[in-house]
Length: 228
Image 1 (cartoon, rainbow, N blue to C red):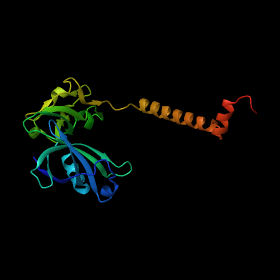
Image 2 (cartoon, one colour):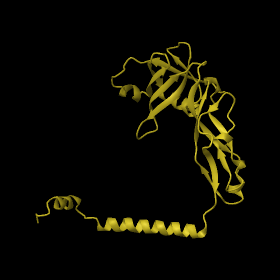
Image 3 (tube, rainbow, N blue to C red):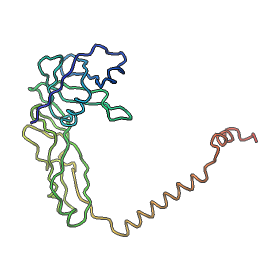
Image 4 (cartoon, rainbow, N blue to C red):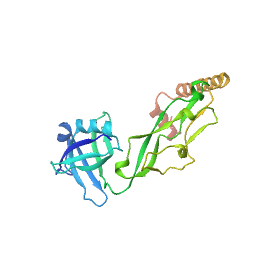
């Protein structure tokens, strides 16, 4: 498993304006965990972006605060700027290596479905992640799901079919469907769908055309129908 290391420094300006720190590409964060005291820290924004892109939320990160011994954490959550991709806050969850935790792991579809390739079917993915329980060292970035078993339109891949890595227990319902393949649309269905879209567009255009030009005047007239 890849090793990730992120440096941080303690933050004392809790509750104060952090605009100057963010302008210097420093990101405020909080570290918390079961039975530990919350710590407010500051990390380099560029370094955090790089590590989060690689580690995601299911890979352990060694967080070094003020050159102390590394602390094993998970990047539990991040907040981004509303109009930019910059991370403006992060939550680090301190784990205990002997204590099981729960997390969500992405399902990675691999292989090729004969129902798609040979019969022109449409792959339908109904589950992107699964909730799991395991020890921190058993976490993996993703779990592969082989879709080559989808050979007909009647085939389904269920949670019970997923081969979980050693040490990982999947908590989702076994009967829940992960992926399937639906038949391609017939020409009649495509034509009917196109007709429906055209009708919807026409209806929207008609409503817009009939809409009063002066909305405020129309609302005033509706509220005071006796006034001319």
